[in-house]
Length: 293
Image (cartoon, rainbow, N blue to C red; front, side):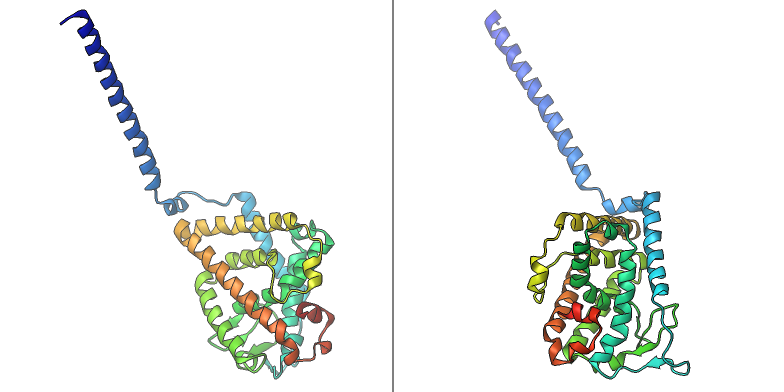
C-alpha cells in the first residue's frame, strides 16, 4: 500500500470512528430524554411535600379567617322553638340565607392581606362582580342531602329547607344547581382546604359576565394586582392538590373546577338578568341591590 493510500485509509478510519462516537452520544441523549418522559410525576407527591412551612401557615390562617368571619356575623334563630326557618318567596331567599352568607364572605375576604393591599376601587369591583356567585358556591357545601337542609355548621343559624328553595326563582335554576352541587361535591370530596382556596381563587376572578353593568366594565381597575393576588391562591391550591391527589388527578381537578365555576357564574348571571320578574329589588338591602344590578 502506497503512503498516499495509507493516509487515506487512516482518514476514513478516523471518520468512521467519529461517526460511531457521535451516534453513541446521540443515543445516550435520547435515552435520557426518554427516561424523563417516562417519569410518573404523580409519584413525586409520595416522596415530598410541595407545601413548605410558610405555605402551611397561610393555609391555616385562611381556615381561621373563615371561622372568624362566621363568628363576626352570627345570628340567633328566629324562634327558640323553631329549628327550621321557612322560605316562601324569592324575596325571603335574598333577605335571609343569601344575605347572611354574603356578609360572612365579605368579612372573610376583607381579612386577607392580598385583598387589603388592593386599591379600594379594585376591592369594590371584585365584591360586586363575584360575591353573589360565591354565595351560591358556598351554599353548595352547607347543604345536607340526608336532611334536605342548608345549615352553616357550628352556628346558631336557622336551618333552611331545600324544598322551600325550590319554590323560589325558577325550576330550571334549581335543577342545574342540584347537578352542579353533585358534581362539585364529587370533585372536592369535602376537602375543606381545597374548598377554601378555590373560593378565594373565585373571589379574585376578573371574568366578565353577560349582565355586568357598564359602570363595572368601565371602571379603571388594576388587573395586574388582582391577577397577582389570585395567583397566590392558585399556587397554594395546586401545591395542596399535588400533595393530596398527585399530578394527574390535580390536573383533572383544576380543569373540572374551572368549568363548574363558569357554569355557576352563568346561572347566577341569568338570575341577575331576570331578577325583576321575581321580586321588587327595592325591597332588598342596599348590598343585595348592588349585587343584583
